[in-house]
Image (tube, rainbow, N blue to C red):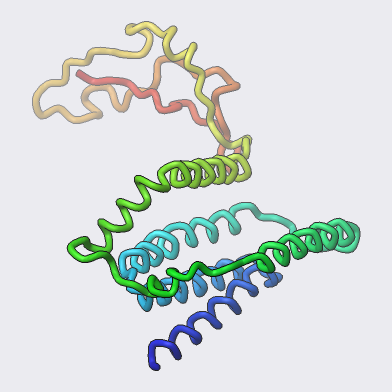
Length: 238
């Protein structure tokens, strides 16, 4: 009885938080409600006896994926007011797509039938002699290995897309020219200095500066407008 009450409680919170994820105006609030949905889904896994999936959901999705979502949302710096201004213009197209998806869901659920043997597997524990982690691994990496690889590919594409969206070519960034670096000679970049034992920097001529001046296109400028002349290539002392 207590298990049933907690099941419906966590399920109701999960559905409400999932609906708020797509309906919240603030994207940061959407990510926070997504974290709430992950926690309630983990609680449902615990009720079903899948404690490994529950811990993975909390550690991986809440601790990494949701934080990554929050980081990307804050890094994109999207003008959401401008996006909302075109809501009415795209409303007919969105309503048409939503109607098609709703009809397809009705067609799927109208023909849905439960298998007679599915009832006995409801919230069933792991098979005898096999731990929960081993049972999940055997099922995931044997019967569903292709779907597992496809899911990894989808996450890879999403990661590359996030990097492309956040990457900006700023004027303050310094660039690297491999051809200029590899074309240098040893005597142009390196000077052998014999430093007496116990001698200070002032006694040996002070701090040495780069012998080769970087090309202007490779030298960035900081916020104060001062150029950088080292570009990561310092003088060597041996």
